[in-house]
Length: 145
Image (tube, rainbow, N blue to C red; front, top):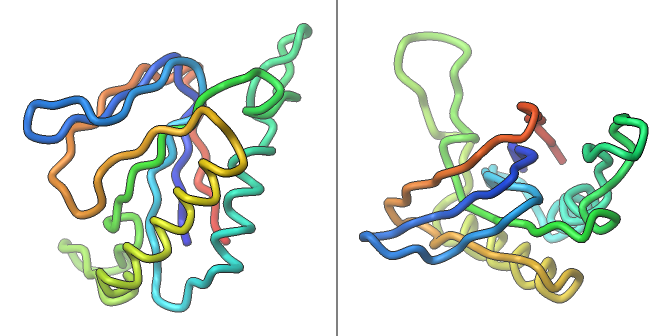
């Protein structure tokens, strides 16, 4: 599982002109599910999302996590994160999880996140989404399980 996180001042996801998820300060998490990912990988990733220390403390150091700043989490499925880009000029997707398995694991992440933290918004799995954000920093990290 690969999750690209961005520390944001605000972020939103729109489908067919309708905003379906929006947050203020927090994390935008673009989630790519790969073949071989498991429920254990989902648990590990959720722990990282809630506890990764990328928010500034009073001294300006990245010492605080999402929960410590009372921030929000926007989860957006993005299978293109599982692309093979090592050679050639066109991405391949044979390492991405099949759609049904990707959706199951993404939905599992959403369910667990919503149980663990009250400020969770989501995109729509498999939809053509438009994602808008104001990256704070900019601060962006690629997390892998």
